[in-house]
Amino acid sequence: MPHSATSKQAGTATLSYDGKSASLPVLTGSLGPACVDVRKLQGELGVFTFDPSYGATASCESAITYIDGDAGILLYRGYPIEQLAEKSTFLEVAYLLLFGNLPNKAELGVFTNGVTRHTMLHEQIRRFWDGFRRDAHPMAMLCSVVGAMSAFYPDSIDTQDPRQREISAYRMIAKIPTITAWAHKYNAGQPFVYPRNDLNYSENFLHMFHAVPAEPYEQNPILTRAMDRILILHADHEQNASTSTVRLAGSTGANPFACIAAGIASLWGPAHGGANEAVLKMLAEIGHKDNIPAFIEQVKDKNSHVKLMGFGHRVYKNFDPRAKIMQQTCYEVLGALGIKDEPMLDLAMELERIALEDEYFVSRKLYPNVDFYSGIILKAMGFPTTMFTPIFALARTVGWISQWMEMIEDPQQRIGRPRQIYTGAAARDYTPIDQRG
Image 1 (cartoon, rainbow, N blue to C red):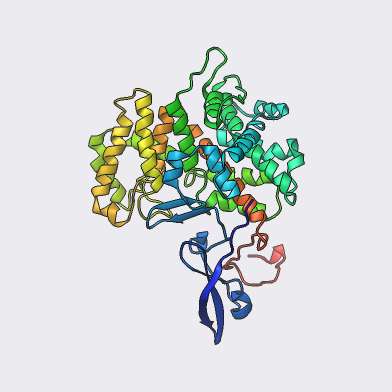
Image 2 (cartoon, rainbow, N blue to C red; image 1 turned 120 degrees about the horizontal axis):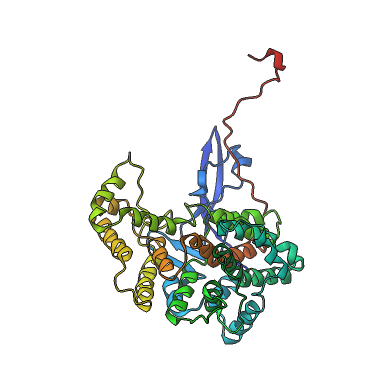
């Protein structure tokens, strides 16, 4: 793993309070806005900063992913997401995120072979599924199985051993497609399909997910490429909620499998990983293009609590660059499947057109995000909506592992410990129960 370059001091900011002043370093990275280093603030002024949801706080230094939300830019290790989605494979991007540079042919061959040789699960892990109800949510299965992997692979949980960290990275990236596919198979009541080492990463996942023993599964190269692109677009996204969860869990020294399970649990939330499923639900509720104007008026009504799903983003205040790629992929997938008239896509396109011409949404910079089209693609490719978030977790695992490894190797790393503003009762004495009113 490469050591990330450290930030540089670009000046100082002075903060005065209660007759005292503190001179705080202003730090800059290679891209993005400057940050005021407040680590000495409490010692010098006796106060903390208050930033609910950490929207204005940098929690770490990282060299992995950069986002410029105003310009609609997403870079993995400096490479634009548009170039990677068009030209790279997922494993090539995985290597880039993990090790800092695009691999040459020999490096990619070694990495691909290492991942391929770890795709099988310990056979006893199969027994986990026997303990779930048939209708258990796939994310519940992912959380449970990934969290338990340290019990089956104890030879790669020493976080202080670089070699064990690397083995755990290979194992997680290799095995998460198998776990995800088997979660679906268990829901469907179908036999588990074992990984095949003659297939590439996306082909192997699609085979394990869709194949049945009764007949051969035919790979469609357009769908395989679309799957690769979906994984690339979701591989990492800076310090989002689930990535921050992985880093926070990792700061305690927890084993990597436990940390990734924590990330999966965080991603499960509908405000994070479940957004594309919410888009399909919204489109189904609208039903027809003729109903869009009335729906738009409901969205504008503050008292209706109706939301325009798939538009806007916590970070992007311009077009989400992933959304444009996903839109093009949507056309490719529907074309490959011979779907010439897809009412849900037509509805989505018309909704997008109307919203982008409405001053209400334009002034609020509510543009389509990656979730607006991804659900339509996944549905067309035969994935049930309950599998949308697990596929997101499958893609994001490489980002979580990369962020976790970077955090472990950061010399500034300490256990995470946010502060609070206490608003409870002041100190008071205990009252015996017979004297309480």
